[in-house]
Length: 268
Image (tube, rainbow, N blue to C red; front, side, top):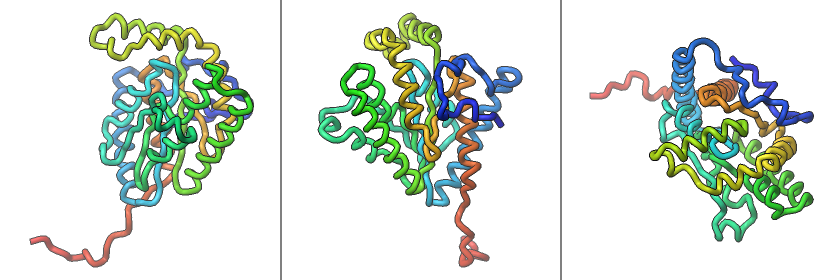
């Protein structure tokens, strides 16, 4: 199993120290790696079934990353074998007028995982300490308050039975250029492209610094951040699948004890 420590955000964290092209999870041929991903997806399905049967705890996977980093692709491949009854995906768009009328964490409470459930957040509450910081909508003092509020919110989740895993999908500027160009050049992918992506791309350096600060301030023992090298799509999927499988194995979910009243019961 992959060692995740080098990619777990700690006190002396610098995003630039992690190469988006790293591939610590890629061993053997491409075919072997795809087979490994399929086996991990099957094991994840079995572990999630046990989590659901146990009915006591839940898991939250947070996916953050720049445009084209592969949040949708991660969900598609990592959970390719998992029953949709046990996994729920929530996508965080720009906040609506209703959401803006409340505190920035208000919309998060409605989509936290239920008991026995694995929830995936495609983007998340971290949009509220990334975009506003880059755009200058909040000052440093407000950003610090929000980091603290996020840590308190995630501690609440952890203390009430939610295991929180946060992954930043780390791609390079060059890889993003190729993926954006592919969306433009291929007619069946143009629906994914927005001219706003080019506006955000011009602020790449600002977003990298905002990510570095946010990750460093909010990677905690109860809700750690992992930086996932994501220039390789297959590597990205394998690393997150391994991380999730390891997380669930460590939780040791167990189905309820057999019902003694069913012993010897024959269905006619």
